[in-house]
Length: 543
Ligand code: F6P
Image (cartoon, rainbow, N blue to C red; front, side, top):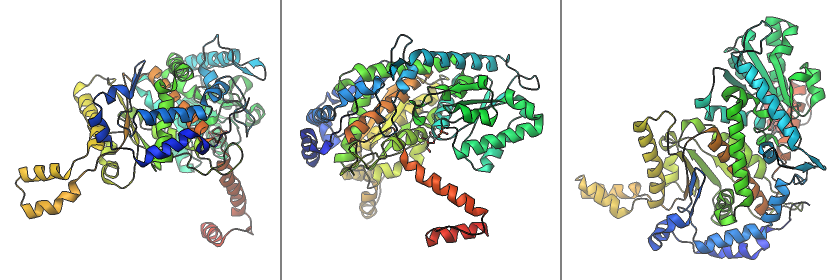
């Protein structure tokens, strides 16, 4: 079964939403009209509380959004997604990151074969390997225990493990885990500067094992190690995660040090696979398993909950509402914890590489907006940076605020201040400050009337800025797993409604091909054809 193909603009629900969009009300007036709104438009699930009442919807709009999901065939698409159908049609693959965190008794078939036993075999291998590095029983070529791990990978082979390792720093053991991603040699040197060859383990992560950046960085790291410890050391200091076993062999990594992954795991959804090896090393295999468990809980919620009560579905439909009907170009993600400082970057790949498409599932150019722009930074820092634009700028920016009821170090004074800001910002964004309120505040300060009137327009906040609040009990491997899985399913739902293929990424290819051409030209005496701007720039670089 392949995914349904339906131009969303042809459905009744789409037309209804277009009508509703013309006369939707302000957030303030929705709240005035319905004092029970916060209860109505919120979802409590496990340790998550999702309040989406500060969005421009009422029951009719919500109903039409849910109808849109149904019209798009979300129910059958969800079945195809979980059951291993080839829904990544343009690459001829299933999309089964959910199988990586399924329970051992699950039965998920690819080409007739249940993949779960293999998933558990790899999980066991990750566990055993991580334990032996953490407890020091696995030795380096010089007989030392490892103190440092360098993850070499880029995109999904970097962002996922890096974001999670940062997010779960509280749960970390003694190993220092570093991330080497950019082909920028300065980045490589800055990482190598921090580590000692005798006690460093390199984890080379590349689904394809053909990515220029990763292979270049791995080769440089290997040379650095060989220069220090000799060629025989490579076997003890390098392990790899990939689907491409021959290429790993050619690189010189022994078969027993290879952690396999499958082509049915997309790079940006791969942190649950052996790509998560650096996570298991950093926080220990038990915490890694908890992370998977949390994701599995969210999978069950997404798979079995009616759309109105389904967190990823409702969040995705809100995105569609703003993106396609209310003219929003972007969406902000603001975590109120420093631990999640890389979450927006991680989501940029997950969301924008998946849904940044303009061809529908019939191969036609879409006539409507698809993937939006994702950005964000942790609060409260963000308040002192770009919140000015959110409060008083001209753009509509729906934002997700993610906060935790408990801090990890139980510092109540700090946490109360953090959370006071967390709640205050969504209130301020929605309620704003009227001219009358500004006037009253300024005249209370005794300001001269003429001066006061000049200042009033600059101090007004129009409000009516939509936010969704995710309040989660505590940042743990389990809740983080659920949070990340929530975004994965949100991506899926959006892609289904927009009638696009979310799991390929052909748009990253052209630049890579041209870079290969230009790289050759750096050492050639003649140059190929380029536009005059590019030719001039290359000449200037070559000197
Ligand atoms: O450039 C895009 C991309 O293919 C991503 O989708 C992927 O996560 C990244 O490159 C790295 O790919 P690989 O794991 O094969 O090295």
